[in-house]
Length: 139
Image (cartoon, rainbow, N blue to C red):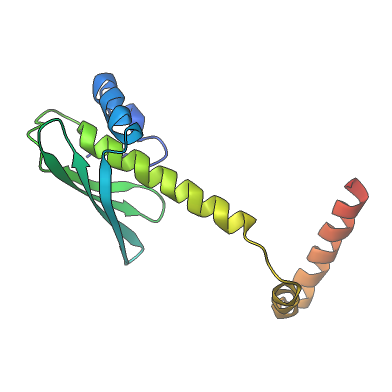
């Protein structure tokens, strides 16, 4: 497999296959998506409702987003990922984006902030104070 990453996998997919994969994703054909973590790698397993049958898709993604492996039990035999793999990659990317957004917007209590601040070294505390003062000046 080419050096394909979750963020830009589309450039490794035939345009027609990409369109079909997007349609599968948009109509909710990806189900039973499961994820396991081991050795800085995420393993995904999903079922995709195809035109006639349901197909099983297995995808391995490293922590830097590289799609290490992707397989599907459909009869597609051309180079590059099939539409079922595309649909699952789109779902994974969307879920990861939602998780990242939730982490950024998750509320943090004053106690948690104080605890984190107290754990910093003196030099780091000075940097935090400079950032806070700079931010207040800009506001």
